[in-house]
Amino acid sequence: MTAPILEIQDLSFSYDGATEKIFSHLNLKVEEGEFLLVKGPSGKGKSTLLRLICRLQQPRSGIIRYRSRDITQIAPSTLRSSISFVAQIPRMIDASVKENLLLPFSFEANKAKSAPSDHSLSQMLRNFYLESVPLTHSAMKLSIGQMQRLAIMRAILLQPDILLLDEPTSALDPESAGMVFSLIERLNTNEGKTLITVTHSDYVPQAPRAAVYRLHERTLHQEK
Amino acid sequence: MNQIIDISNWQLLLGLLFILLAQISSFVFHLGLNRDIAIGTVRTFAQLFLMGFVLTYILETERMLLVVGVFLVMVVSAIFIIKGRVAEKQVSYLLPTFLTMLVSYFATAMFVSGLIIGSSPWWEPRYFLPAGGMVIGNSMSALAISLERFFRDLRQQRDQIEMQLSLGAGYREASAEIFRNSVKAGMIPSINAMMGVGLVFIPGMMSGQILAGIDPMIAIRYQIVVMLMLVGATALSSVTIMLLIRKRCFGSGEELLLTSS
Image 1 (cartoon, rainbow over the protein chains, first blue to last red):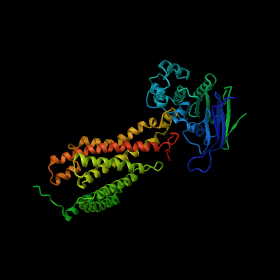
Image 2: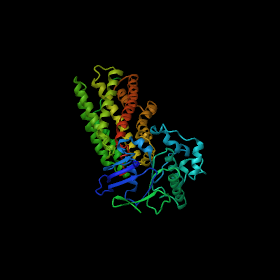
Image 3: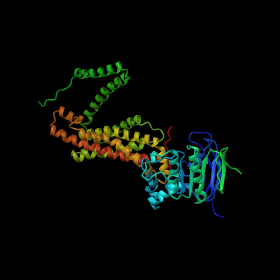
Image 4: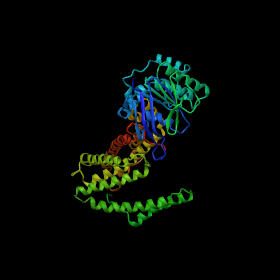
């Protein structure tokens, strides 16, 4: 039996100065290629869970392992090249769509990865329902829905092992949200990407290996 | 012609008419500055008279430790002024700032006094202390501007920084632009001063020397050295302090520690 790609053991977390814990003795195992959907009301720590996995925040206690290695023993930039996090509100630099997509390849940790050609980028834009957006277009002029898809595409270009998506549809209209959800499912079913998505919406994934968890009483419970 | 005209106590008090003017402006237009102007005036008289007495003694001294001690007091005072201007609670920046100021300003003042002016010994108080004082006074403002800008921009651009960190950027890469802009913000006033000197304004030190009867051609040489020294010292101290402080703004996972509250 292979080891899980991600394992969380006995995780506890509370914000600085807060007495109440956000998580207490939280445990989770994620197999490679699995699609996890974490649900729960706002403010209960769904985003924090993702941020802890990619070390944008530090746990009070407990261990998070990526491919059996304690993530605190992995260089942060190397870890984040393998576990990509897409924030709830997508952020772009004030430059063209192409410059935004190639931004990660300018970082030292990603220098060994080969940047995609313009042709591949245009092809991917089509797959991400962005065929009407030229590579030279200013990213700041995109709608929030287009930015969200572009942000997911940018994270995917790095070929991460795990993709963490924080409320990817919360700011979108139903049509854009539908596009993003179908995109997420395709990444899992067609490309075998390991996905952890947090949401407070009623969305139920159709992906065959999808597992739905609910954040309740400071820990995760799998829904049958 | 070369006789220096002394300013008597009565003449000095006449200068208070300028303060009266400022107080009236504040009163009439409700600027709320009356108290600050009053305190500032008293402090100007008290601090400068005290400095005059101290300098009269120090300038005659042959004790290096005393001169270095005065320099140390000036740096410590500067740190308290920076602390008052940079309201940062989450990152402890005072000790690295103090050490940076001490080392870089001491090296600059020593270089100017001992090597460029060629005083012997290098700590000759007549040269070392004014050079040190000008470096501390000017560069202190530059440091405060840089630090203030750096902390503010890190907070305001937190989402942008985290976006880059999430895509594999190191903390240096994610904060590179903020780093550059903060150092530049601190350096621009001293560079601008080089642009305007002699055209837009006559610098204080040069004016002082000319009033004291020094040949203007000698005064300008001193002033040129001072201008160059200020730009160099500002660059050295701003870059060093930013390098030291930046690391403290990020945690062991290179996560940004500064929060908006």
